[in-house]
Image 1: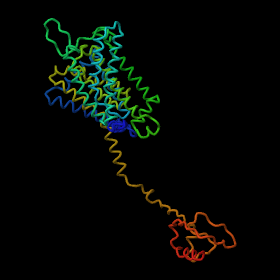
Image 2: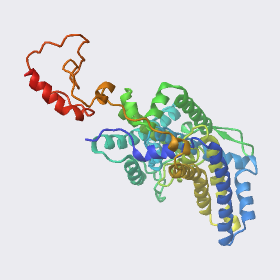
Image 3: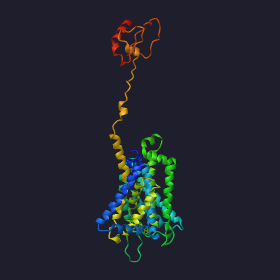
Length: 452
């Protein structure tokens, strides 16, 4: 039985993404690598027959050129931010959760089942849908913690493999009439999807098209990010979470329940991913139906947002906006003759540009410290001779010892008297060895014969 402790992959990631000393070097290197990433992106667009200038303009028009474009970008920001914040929580504890894509689907599945099965009036149905998504995905992620606790299954492997299981569950649910498949209307063909959730189970938006629209999911995501950032930075629970991620042995010695805290962090990460799935189900970013491909790679992109933000929930907010802009503007690239999948390439290059500098600089710093020779001052400093337990008088004496002197190596010296000590019975206990008294071995034998 394995003890639920710390996931080694998450612990190494947490340490490598921490810039530590020399933060200005990391900042300069990050700026340089971002420039290289953008240059490589332009080169790829040119090689594929497109125009880098036209592609950049298309990205801008589809994501930031108008209030309507900003509304679309912000719709993607909300689920990306929720997934990223959950990934920050799990990584802070040392568990590297990469199953957010499946947890998003499980959250949407639980929310759709509650929204379509319960006839609850008013906004209470929306609250129940969100809660069901949180609980369902949290339990789904908690299964990985239980597998690690009882069977020793690595968290990274289990969360990734459970993503494929979640995809099969969604496919089964939307293709089974008695479960969540849509109702037949007349003689129409049934599609692998559910019925749309009721109106009172959908999130409302502030503003009207073509003006800027702010969906309620964005407000919810920002509030969650700020609250969790404060909790992890200012509370005892957050301090223990960081302690477990950095050194689980020390945390366990300090009385922290490492297994329970790590499992809780993993469940919170899955719960937030499930809440992102509820937003995809109840917000205008989707069709308000449960569909096999409705996750839209939000789980994977949210994980990238957390990596770029270096597990900082507050920093994840602007990074999520950047990824939302890239996602919203990617659909406009087809008009310029550039494949839309190049947006994924650009995102991958940006992730490397943000993640690689602290790792590379840390490796160079460690190598430089290992190659530095010892300083001349330290090399020239004479070392003090090792201290010995032999008294100076005994070390200087080379002749026969006086019978009134204490036996070398004895635990206590005899008192200084003018008369010789009265010989007592011979002790049979072995005398402790004295490393500095090899020259007086014959003197000891002579004195023992005298006492005998």
